[in-house]
Amino acid sequence: MNPYDIVRPLLFRLDAERAHHLTFALLDQPLLRPLVQWAAGEPVNDPVDFLGMRLRNRVGLAAGLDKNGEHLQALSALGFGFIEIGTVTPKPQPGNARPRIFRIPRRNALINRLGFNNHGLDALVHNVQQSGFDGVLGINIGKNGSTPNERAIDDYRECLIRVHGIASYVTVNVSSPNTKDLRRLQGGDELSGLLAGLSETRAMLADRDGKRVPMVLKIAPDLDDEQIALIADLLPAQGIDAVIATNTTVSRDSVAGEENAGQTGGLSGAPVFDMSNRVIRALRERLPVGYPIIGVGGILSAADACAKIEAGASVVQMYTGIIYRGPSLISDCARALAHQAATGQAPSR
Image 1 (spheres, rainbow, N blue to C red):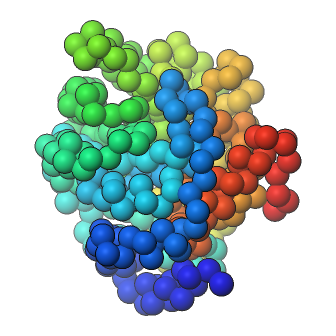
Image 2 (image 1 turned 180 degrees about the vertical axis):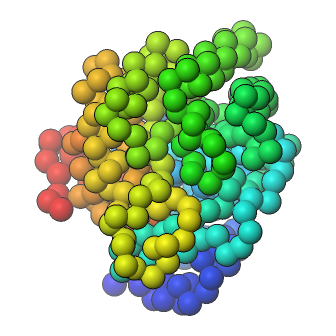
Image 3 (image 1 turned 120 degrees about the vertical axis):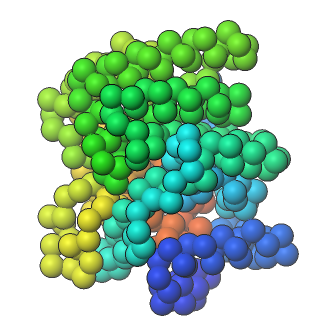
């Protein structure tokens, strides 16, 4: 029996955000770490080279679970191949009013409208520096809600400058639906200008720090074919090293009629699986051969993770699936992806 099957009903009786904080309060207790590691299963050692980094395995944590880099040691005990924290903004901000996370259990889904709630750059940089974490760390950056799009480059540039020295890679998040007008930055001229400016800043930082930190773009699942093609052409042209496909969706077609389906925010979990795979396939067809894609969205089983690779992803990330399936999902997926890479065979869905 999966130990999480005992814990989940208790957590699901609580408000989703309260359950989140309670879970981390327990995970952060060193005395409980052996129990957590037992529940997560044996970590999978399947080293893979990705963006010049050596990943422990092909399964990463998506941004959003640890916005401030406060729980890196606890998360590393779960067996991830790499961890992404954030989204961080230059200044602290509370995000949107509570309640702002809603479960849709019948669809293995969540809706969140957190709104980039975080403690700001100073806190995140301090937390990472004090954590002792030595794994592959992605830091997801965004703009403050009060910053207009015309000055968005200033916020992203400030974040990039501050995290460049501590990040294994940096993700530029222009795809959250919970910051007003943010997704407009995915448009052609806006995106081209933003990425060009950040690439110029990154080149300066590479000279300063003596290292070139990979830069990644995270995009939405709601893009049409024309938008995907435009982004696919911009990525290599602007020196962006990889793309994360995808963030949450604003569509409610797959959860129509369900309790909480009418809540505003981004929908994640199983309903995003096919949407993100569509974007991954379209990117793979358009991007240069071998261009790295991180596949995320709706992974709730080992077969789901393998399907992301079959669609064209290089590695995967997860978040909502862990809430519904527990930490053993991480090792299950990592083991299946290692087997798939070695044999070309994946479990059926």
